[in-house]
Image (cartoon, rainbow, N blue to C red; front, side, top):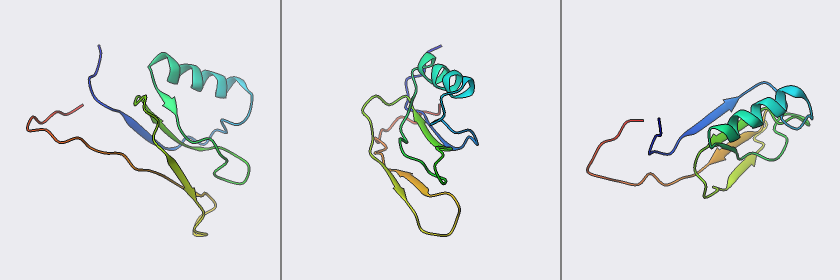
Length: 91
């Protein structure tokens, strides 16, 4: 089944994708298998990449990472345009 819509999955996966281990390889492989890519490229918590933004959108969006000092994780942000249409589509 092919979805004709953009998908964004964001959150704390609680696994460090900067590590070269079986979990990171399996997760990245799963993203690729389903046409997804992980956009955050820098450590978010200390030296770990735990908070991910995953999308099937091939035009890569710019991800911002900011430290507001209110958490032990930095804030990850992405801005994207929601294209309007008269047709309502739920995916």
